[in-house]
Amino acid sequence: MKRLIAPAVAVVVVVVVIVLVASSGSSHRLSATFMSATNLVTGARVTAGGEQIGTVSGVSLRGGLADVKMHISNNSVWPLPRGTQAEIRWGGTVSYSDRYVELLPGPKGNPPLANGAQLPTTDTVTPVEFDQFFNIFNAPARQSLDELTDRGDATLASRGPALRAGFGETPGALEQVADTLGALGEDPYALQTLVSTGAKTAQALHAREPQLVDLVDGAASTFQTIAQNARDTERTLAKLPAGLQAAQTMLGELNPTLTRLGSLVHTIAPGAGQLRSLASPLSSAIHTLGAVAPELNSTLATVQDHGAAVTSFLDTSQPVLSELRPVLSSLAPMLGCLRPYAPEIAGWFSTWQSMGSYYDADGHYARVEFQAFPFIDDDPATPAQIVADTPGLGYALLRPPGYGVGQTWYQPQCDAGPSGLNPADDPEANGG
Image 1 (cartoon, one colour):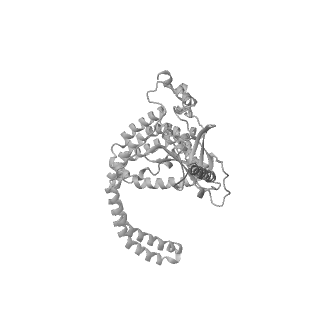
Image 2: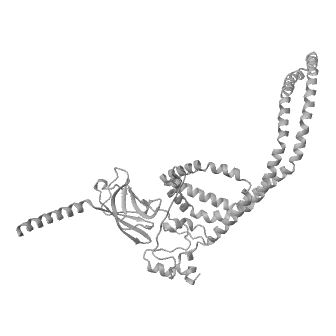
């Protein structure tokens, strides 16, 4: 019996040594620095080209950034070339908490990354979270949006058919927007230029608000003046065909006279050479005018027939332009507060550009989202106590622009100031 046990133990030891040697040679280490790593946990998948090549071995917070360590167990992709990028992605459209890391290998031919290399934030992509988008709508923004909705209802209530026709064209427009956002996502420099140009444009419009208001007022006054004089113009056009008819009759009678005048000019040619050179083009012009007169008469008759439609259009345009001024006044502060969030909004659209493609054969669409927090909704602890008791948990009552990437840009005029990042200032701390 002892003789059988000894060879068996030896075989087990040999197998263990082989496994350890094989495993030590096929696992490689790689780290990446992200702006944040929400819901990314140890053991999460690491993929490349849709195939799992490793797992996440650790997630830690360092200097306000997330340090993600990975083990790469697939030797077919190692060594990864320099220029490799890492993205944190969602496991599916119905899973908010299932996160994994996708590696995008750099160009072939680049020098290889060393074992244990660290990818900087310039080579990583952090997804935009829902709260970053929803926190845009603070109290002033909600109030302005409420006023805009009320005024928009008064302006657009009678234009349902036109809006319905416009919404009918929306799917094609959304597909074009998705294609455009996809192209921008592939070209970060073009996206940066677009965001920068949009911000400058919004800033220029905000700075020219008085001039825009004066422009709208001037346009409204102009249309109002045209509408007030439309009936006088219509009466003038009504009398114009009869006058042109009389002119046509007169030109028909004038033609023989001009012929006789031509003979007279030839008779007095020796003494009026310059007059004869003028008579020929003048006669041609008069003949042309006689030929064009019937068409002009028909054109003026058409204008007269549509005078009532023009008057109705101008009468309809006047109240719309009058209501457009307060709508623009309500829109200006909203644009001023939304402008700093342009990069976050662009990132959200880039992440959700495919949301319109999940429909079944009947045109139905569904999305389910799940998120779990390390505390209950009716937790009696204050926000400051929860943050202190939960390592890695941050706080932002109203997240300022750039907060997610470590480039905070405070907007006190939009209630997005430094106090919004202090849990001790939360109204819940005082029972609010």
